[in-house]
Length: 309
Image (cartoon, rainbow, N blue to C red):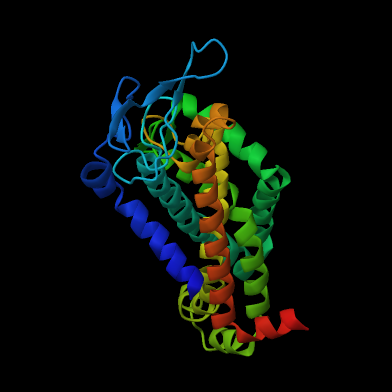
């Protein structure tokens, strides 16, 4: 329950990003503000402050002020409000993580159930495709696909995904994790196929489609539901890694990974720029994983007992 509350708070805060940006912070999270000023302790100060050390030739973004109306978490190297960008970045990170998890599970159900139920040639072909995907290190495959597709986008028949679209990381991340969900589902369906209620339906002359819809899918659905929060967490981490490498979410959009990248050069002077999105990723990932464990225990109480043995 606690993990669900934390997750809801994170999602709600990210959805309210425009409200915070316009009504509270009064900034533009996507416009450079290197010449702007803000108010700290009643005094107007520049957002980009002259460095005190060395020759004093450079500038450093203002640090956390503790005031939600004036750069709560400080500014990034372009003078943009880190707190506002953190909320907007969370929207994209959570969106990509959740939608790519849905895409991954949908493809995995299609492939895993088909391979497990029909067997034979269908199973052989689909299993070999999964083996090929499984053979690649997941991050290496994601990086290779991102680098290639970011130059030209993706065209699937009448559907075209532009290189800068959020649909591109959704497609890449959703695809690379299909084997990790499809293979367990395939094994579960192969076991279900030998059960008496399936054999009874076959003996009664039920069609394959009817058996799949009425008998097989309801039995694998709890497993898919358990996978969803876990895959959302994994996919969000993958998106953050790709965006940190500048091959995920593209400007002017932001994500938690891009914000960490923005703060990489400020780790020793303004660490909040990188620490804030890193902490948000950690909290959200832990909440999603605990939620997945809770869903698993709720749908399969015996699993908790087996884990305690």
